[in-house]
Length: 248
Length: 354
Image 1: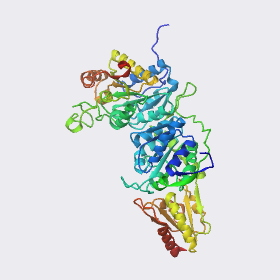
Image 2 (image 1 turned 90 degrees about the vertical axis):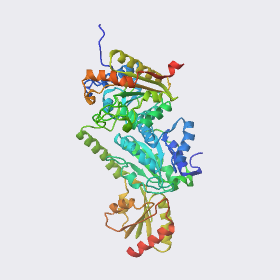
Image 3 (image 1 turned 180 degrees about the horizontal axis):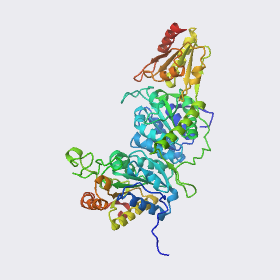
Image 4 (image 1 turned 180 degrees about the vertical axis):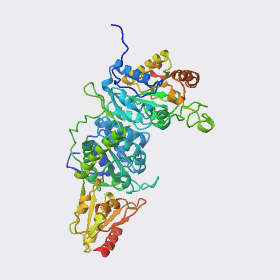
């Protein structure tokens, strides 16, 4: 039998609503493959956040809870503290995690909350139609920074992995990308490591995936991946910012 | 401590112990006066009984931890005081929209804003009108003694589980801080199963999704309609109140919580002066005990007494269909009305209507 490329068991067999060229679909797949490989879907609870990925509760085959905007790490904390043997992950965008949910993110991280956060950084608010995000690059044009993000007025973007890497509760903080086959493979390894660390009880794990939003960037899928490489990666360098496993 | 033995306890601590006896093993909170004893007691006791006490970074976070634990199916609570409830309003709306049961304690203090730390009853509207965005209700229970603080905790958890609604115990700084002798109940066992909970499907059932988002208007309208069918059942079956000397009363007071304690003394004093006074003391603020007011056949007038500028008084007027006069007396700012002040109001109302 030749190897066949199939849908992971932990993904529900329904069409996704994501736009063409959006990397959410790829990242959903990587999370689902990980749940399959670790054989943990049955004891996993996923937390959907607010933004484009709110509908992730329709796509993951594990039990799901939809959280208020920014509060996914707090909701995940409630689940994990109730069922410490469960595998609990949040799936959050940049506005959700790094603007309205900054406090919940930082405190779940510093508590060493034994959860996994999948953080999608596409430098824009997707669901509401392309407004400036906490990770929007300096000079980047969005609906609410129509002349380009002026850091004198709007301040600077937040580098989440770098910020969280100073906290003792963090077991893994790694930034990956989904712009090429090579980087997708790296992303998969990081996501799998995060879940493995959680299962081993090592602490808070976060994988930031630098992602594209062709619709709100106003580019073709191909151009948006090139824009990501040319503009986002220099500001958000890929790499491991904290890895308790490697430190040992 | 054994059951049926009387012990002297502070209201906040008695409530916390009662929650543990009711099977609650998960508490998420944030310090705020005058409820902090609940959290302090839980932080001491829960680790000893295999439970989880967690101090969150804010009330915003703690109520969302409650959402997570409740959605996973455990008996869970939080405790706060008035400004904290304002911060929790978002989460409470989601909890109601997700049909997740939980217990929220509000040990009321004076507001608005930072207000003061003395007892008040200014959060009645907030508690009984849902307190967050969207169409929803909380079951709201109002104890007026430390014993009732204890007794209403298991009632609150059981009602929440039965109807899949968040429940609030609306206490105040006076009840939370005072000490009274209480009899604690036996530990509650056999908590109900929650087949809808999201705690891992184990490959044994369809996946569960706990969610409040319905993007198609007809679907959302249907969900809301079904939720309000449950609310109608609650209104029909769960009204609770104490009617004190109301049968022949010309003047019927309406008061809950701490102000009801003052009113009871004032009613007794009025009776001593030959005035036929009585009191309806709502124990459920929602559902409001409408039927108890209808049973006050002799009443010529009602007098609502609150530690606010007049909030429950509107429900009393609705309960009597504005068919008889409903007067109001209140103190604010953290001041508890005195029995003498209330007696003077009873005499005034009796003089005009009785």
